Amino acid sequence: MRKAIIAMSGGVDSSVAALLTKETGDECIGATMKLFHNEDIGVKREKTCCSLDDVEDARNVCYRMGIRYYVFNFSERFKEDVMDRFVDAYEHGATPNPCIDCNRYLKFDKMFQRMRELEYDYIVTGHYARVEYDEEKNRYLLKKAVDDTKDQSYVLYMLTQEQLAHISLPLGGLRKTEVREIAEKHGFVNARKHDSQDICFVPDGDYAKFIEQYTGRKSIPGDFVDTEGNILGKHKGIIHYTLGQRRGLGIPAASRLYVCDISPKTNQVVLGNNEDLFHSELTATKVNLISCESLKEPMRLKAKIRYRHPEQEAVAWQTEDGVLHVRFDKPQRAITRGQAVVLYDGDIVVGGGVIENCIK
Image (tube, rainbow, N blue to C red; front, top):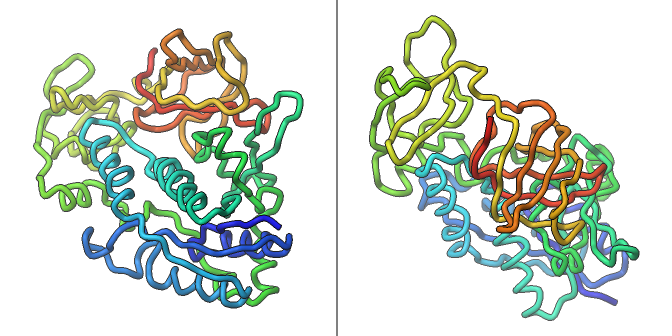
């Protein structure tokens, strides 16, 4: 009998993942990560994941299944590796993906550390993706979920071979409707609970307000400029803008203007036409490859530049310094620094990295 720690958010997905694991006969415990103190960021406890309600839902499900339940306090690490990185990215003109950082540094790092300390064998999560072992390649593979409307392989591209060897993703072969049906059949209190959509520590979606409150600093106003460098007006501070944004600019123009670039060095926000947002190539760093050791030779595959972005035909390769280059068959709109580019070969995740630059 093996021993498993189920990462439980209080939602239906992790609850059903716990049930399916328990039904294998393995010894299970449920664990919720306490990631931050709501009062410190000025939001009500019931407004975020890891709230008291979520903890109680997870505890209720564990009690119903007869397994032990714990809350692990990782708030200090979450502040350093997720919230501080989030703020730093926006202050440097990038648009981060904190859910990927949470997976990288919390779920599959701190939770793994706790797994080893407690002498457990593997971690279970409610992510919609699949892990398989390829005997021919002698590698673990990360694959898309069967339910393509819920697939979360994009946010798991950073997983290492060591981590994949100790992960179970029981929902990868199920559809969301089936997961809810299983939860209802077993009387789980969260069977019809809505999925969390927002960034947990910015539940109202106002990133700039959060950053100013978190840092205690007001964002410094600067110039809106056009693509030729001509001043068009004043902006409120670069943290208020993301690539491709057109609302809330307050600049009169004969045609629609969009944020085409953000320069933290000059504190300028560059505005242009929609056509100015399209680029054919990008570079990425902090690269992690899963299905292969490297991409020294160009490889034809598909790439996603955002979580909800449709996959696009591309060629990818690495230079000697390890930087990932991705060249698209067709120019892509609003390739954004700080977001992840994730590469796919069919339903297999090849790997990915953090977007640094884009090239026309």
